[in-house]
Image 1: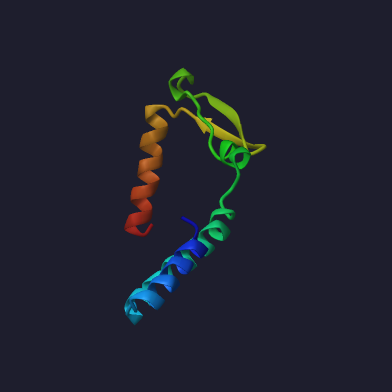
Image 2: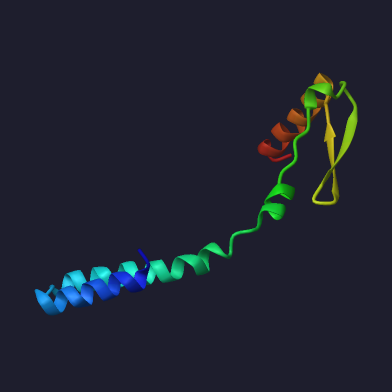
Length: 101
């Protein structure tokens, strides 16, 4: 039911039986929400933009030590499958930063 129809139905009811101020305020809130919702909804990105927002890469196919370049939103993203030695070196750097070196 459109918001305008709700307001008309409530105004007719208020003349016939006399609704309270609280019911009128609730109806006005529902009507305002019904009118504002399309304005907020149109701000969402369209389907083509959402389709470009994500990309999937099968990282199990990348051999150890190799780098794969993937395009995301027209820009390159580099994915590297690190070796266990590279992972240990990166963790050592992180631990050293925590200790304040």
